[in-house]
Image (cartoon, rainbow over all chains, first blue to last red; front, side, top):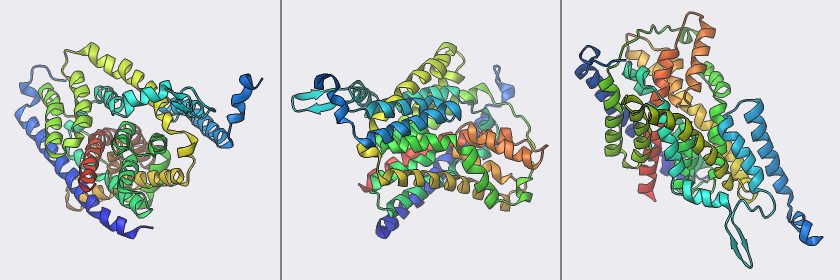
Length: 47
Length: 376
């Protein structure tokens, strides 16, 4: 058991989870923006 | 006679253990339909590389070195991370992001369900793995074979074979791993939460811009993830652009199948008994399971957390789909929802969270590369 290595790795966990929520959050905002800027009714070739 | 049969005397009993492991992988692929496209080539490859003085892998003799084709393939396609990336073009071309684009809230579950990766990284450090190996092991929790191979190659982990076996095995075991974990941390009342689904159309412009902007965002924030995300999104752009139908079909079928064949058998070069039959391999299998469990916990607990503030309640089981393992996890959750309440159709929400997990797991891989590289 390497307690020190475990403690040293905890910031990676913190930054990693923060980082992933930031990246995903920004992506989510862009998708919401796209749905406002490019609604289906203005798009001739929609699904 | 010795010239004809002399190689038999090079046999060592651990080779037979690896043959048995190879046979088990082939059995699971054929009889249990567990990720057969990967486990079967890996199983056969495990036998192939563990034959005495196998000509399939590079052998060093006193007279010189004989290069084996599998070693050459490994150097050409995995050591430089090419095969996982090419496979990502095919995966990107297969994924329809519409359920996610029509319900962007599902993005958050993809992020939350990567918790197992980071938790496992710390757990692996606790058990004595160095940071590079711990990061490679942790990424099993991405529930995404190519990402696991990519990250472990990047860090030059000697456990790549065990990591690939664990990643693909647990992906196939999602129907066994996730339900008990979900039941343990949710109440029946929570599992009965209904989520009505109103199909929203998504414009073609949005579908085309999505892969481009995702690549740019990932590249700006987590530059080491941009190869993974970029190839995934390139495949998706080919699919959604509407003018490259032939290329899209090729990426989804011919390219993906070809790379899968080569990837599976080539990864077996890292399943030689000298490096595979170790206590660490067992630990990696255990830590892989930990990663999947805590991914599931992360997704479910985040859904419960969201329900504290949201008017429209989310069935916490949907959070578990953020694990990636597409589309297995979505199917499992839909089945669990129907088992609790035959009128509770969670499939489309689950698919949304599941494809979000596909993106998030790749980004998590990139973040691991960034964060760990900065500490080396």
